[in-house]
Image 1 (cartoon, rainbow, N blue to C red):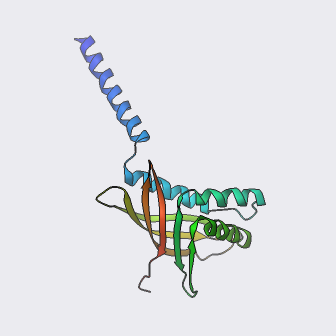
Image 2: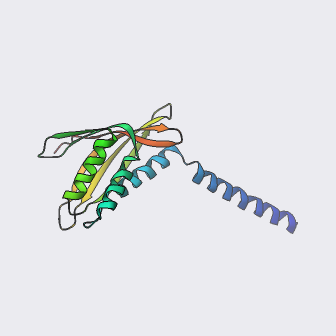
Image 3: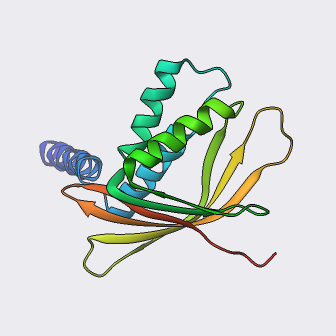
Length: 166
């Protein structure tokens, strides 16, 4: 009887480990998108003193999360609308921001992912929070991010600000 109980417990542990490994290797689309967005926020953040080589490498890393034809349309309160088209413009914009700003910490909160029925595209609605060192006010902006699945990866296809009632 003890042998069977040991075998059953061992089998249950193996099944549990198998399910855990499967979820790591093949995450759900929503989990994969949330992970991608966390990586994007991390890549968009930068310290106040970043070397030119690190600036270029980190700006380039930011473009790897996007499709070649990415479109970013941002309208910050009190400023005009600005659009970036393609990875090259995104790279240049990221380099300019890193060279002009005294650091930035980006965080995405309240992330809601809506998967299309074909499971090949999705829309993420979220709040982007930015904190510049030395500034007491947070930069807060609602964003809508369209993503598409390319191979096994999710890539950002479009980012646009959402006008809020304020």
